[in-house]
Length: 316
Image (cartoon, rainbow, N blue to C red):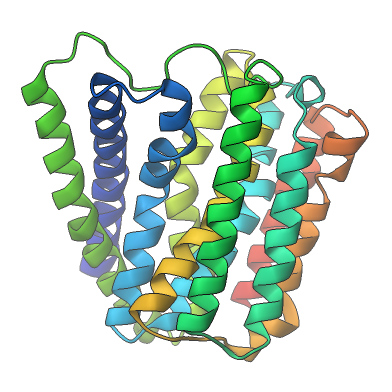
């Protein structure tokens, strides 16, 4: 059983590197074509960083493992709040009170409620996919107009070029980044999904649990690494907005697109437990969004401990 674990790790590394390459290539290509940096940040970068989750979900559906697809999204959203915000807060106070994210937070809660309501249909099919993608189009349009009008209102949308932008990057380098990303993402997704399924079957663990834990944590690593670096640089106040945006995209885009590839049956356990944990974790952000509280080290301990408790409950 050592080889499936090693190949799963290799698949995860490939996913992370390929996702980073795709973002760099897409950002620099778009800027070279004259697309505003703001639009790149709101669309291409958001899509690029969520590409691993999307590829894994699509591959899981094609391999008849829908539990991996749904578990990946639900688990990633829970991990993004409890783990991605909790661990950096242990390193430094995250001054989220300096960033106004009420509008985005309200949209995330609305998207979560919509997602849960559609889940009670028992399956995410093409009808659910069109509803989620329509909601995504509404969110992107509204967020773009708001961000363009109030560009300096929140540090989550700085005046600087987005991360990965290099005005001196040669055209051939952009092409290499794009090719590496487009080849590496499906390769890494295939390795991770195939071997995670083998591990699940060998240990009697369901695809759903593997998606909620191993794959969810793995696909949240880019967000975690970025947030940790921000905390170390005392710039962690942007983390809250990034997490909210990532969760919005996961709920509306990943399952929205994946459900057009094939139906995703909803395990009853999601309806009884995991979806409500995801919603509860989202509501934990209310003090930071509405009451102007910073995410202190104490909050970091609480959030991280809650995630460990969630993993224990899921795995037992």
